[in-house]
Image (cartoon, rainbow, N blue to C red; front, side, top):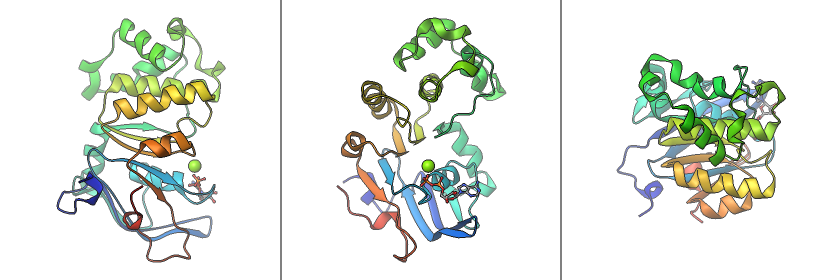
Length: 230
Ligand SMILES: Nc1ncnc2c1ncn2[C@@H]1O[C@H](COP(=O)(O)OP(=O)(O)O)[C@@H](O)[C@H]1O
Ligand SMILES: [Mg+2]
């Protein structure tokens, strides 16, 4: 039985009855969502529906106006978010790099105390760049000169180095050409034990367990779990 149909398990991530308003528009009203370990799910919906807003809430970066989000049954607000961050590879839609060079961007997550022992070698960094489709000679290159697609590939390389089991990715292939999209898709599916992503890529839609269309507020109650598996 696919994990998302197994009601007895505790979800890895659960949003329970969340409501969210942005710029005067209510995007979610008492919306519920569950992601189980091993799931590969895709969120879909037209531009402006709230896909990024929801992903950022599930990734612990923003909070809902009401309702709660849980990691392994623990509310984000009382320790769940901290636990989430030990497992999460977050691939944002718009990559903001604070580091000056590719090398600095790759090692940044390993400079915090908890990750010091996991710091990759130069050879591992070069290998991750190659796997993500960037030249392995690029370590000293300035991040300022990178295109949107190259930034996405750099974040992908960093995620490969972090080796975390849960991946949340917001349109990770949006700035990539067709060949790179296929390569990136393959990497995501291979390396993410649990995957939640937003993509308009039909190839990826066909590869995940389920595509959840985010309902607009006309259809209530909202719940991602009411969608049928593909
Ligand atoms: N930080 C924010 N402040 C104000 N409005 C926001 C913010 N983030 C998103 N919005 C608004 O919320 C709506 C949904 O945005 P978003 O989740 O980015 O849509 P999409 O489904 O295209 O990813 C949009 O109307 C957007 O303008
Ligand atoms: Mg978006």
